[in-house]
Structure formats: C-alpha cells, structure tokens
Length: 129
Ligand SMILES: [Cu+2]
Image (cartoon, rainbow, N blue to C red):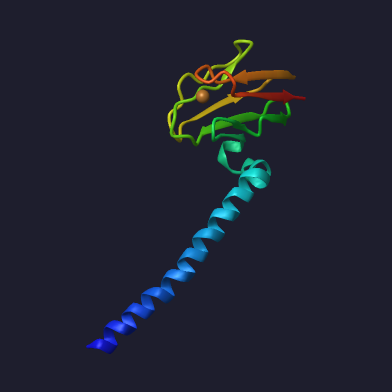
C-alpha cells in the first residue's frame, strides 16, 4: 500500500515538470508570433485580408502598408470593447466585443488614420499604395 502511493506521488511530480515546461515554451512562442509572424502568416488565409490584431489596448501592427483593393481585417483580442474608427469618417466598426472582427476594403490609395473612440490614445494607420 505504501509503495503504490509513493509511486503515484513520484509519477505526479515527474509529470508536472514537463507540463510546466511545455506551458512556458508555448507562452514564449506565442508572443514571438505576435511580434513577428502575424502579418505574413495570416494573410494567405482568413478571407484574403491583411490582419490587424487589437490587443493590450493597441493596434498591431499600428502601421500597415497594403495595395489598393486589399481587405484589412481587425480582430479584437482584448476582453474589452474597442472600435476601429477612421479619423476622416471613411469607416467605423462601431463597438467590437472580444473576438469580434471588422473588415474594410481599401479601394483607393492614401493614408488612412484611425483610432478607438473609447480609448482615443489607441491609434493606427493603413497606408494604401
Ligand atoms: Cu479601445
């Protein structure tokens, strides 16, 4: 009886260590993807749109260069409502809840500044060439 419970205890300790290591590794690779791979990686997939992630009260990437005719898709990854609102009144997502998306097709060349009406310090721009 004693030996079995000792073995079980050892096993659970041994299993816990790799589980923690995997969690740490997963966390690291996730944050790496957010800073680097996000733009290039997702473009081919989701609806053919360029992706902007709203996370930690910021647009990422804050500046996005695209070609005329491209679609930009914003996804709110915060647990708080944000908006994607053009300063020139060109587009307005209205309130975006967690995981909600907003997309806009940029048909004309130009620089399009936008912000969040709830948190006006959140700003971004799309440069259409
Ligand atoms: Cu906001």
